[in-house]
Length: 132
Figure 1: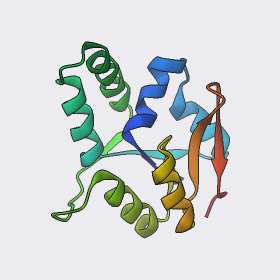
Figure 2: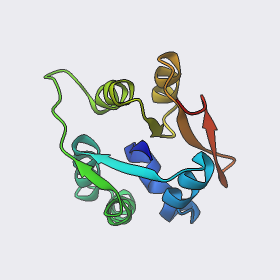
Figure 3: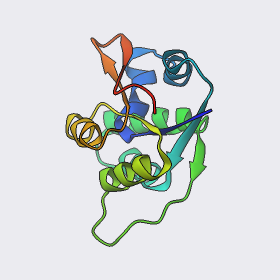
C-alpha cells in the first residue's frame, strides 16, 4: 500500500472536473493507496469554506466533503513551517507520493525526488517521478 498525501488544491478537482481522484490515483499507481489528509490541509479547507468568497467557500465545502474519504492525520509543524513545508518534509520522511497541482510545490518535491500526481489537460491524472 502506498501512502498518498493530498494537497489542498488537489481536493478541488472532484467538484471542478468530475474526477474521482482517489480511484484515479490508485489506478495510476497500480496499487492500493493510503490516502492521507494532514491537519494543515484540513485547516486550509476550513478557512476557505468560511471565507468571504461564496464561490470559493462552496468549492471548499465540496472539497471538505470529499476529504472525508481520506485518513486524517494530525501533524505537528514548526513555528515558521507552512503547509507546503510540512508536506515536503512528511513526503521525504514517509517516502510517499504527493497529489498536488501547485507548480512550486511540484518542483520542490521533484527536487527532493518525491513522486507527484497532478492533473494534466484538465481531464486526466499523471505521475511524475515514478514510485519509490
